[in-house]
Image (tube, rainbow, N blue to C red; front, side):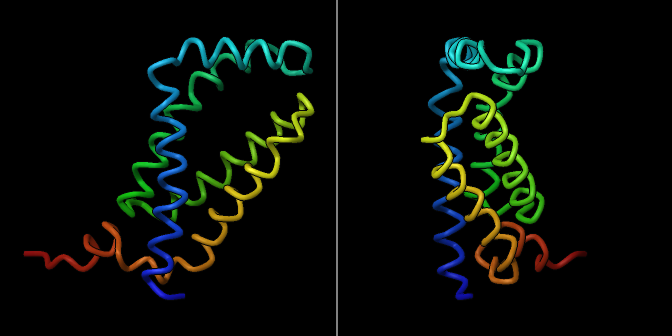
Length: 134
């Protein structure tokens, strides 16, 4: 894969994750309360939903920052794919099938990042790995 193409894929998913986290962080309590309400009739207890919903914006924001910088790229792509699978389980638990396409697309982009990691040359990872040591 062309490094510039890879860069745009990484930046695209990075902007999405960063943006999701950024807009939710200032309204963290309201976001969490809405998620708890949405899961009220599901099999998942509030004891699990509340902490997960509070963590979501931080995870999205952190994944976004790492992707935008190209930092810890393999770890970030694995964490992002795993995060998407967790979100998809929650989406299934409340039968919110309209959210699935977006989550599948995000998952697909994380898999693309992993598949073509060798093209991740325009990144902080590449800069740090090629930096001369004294």
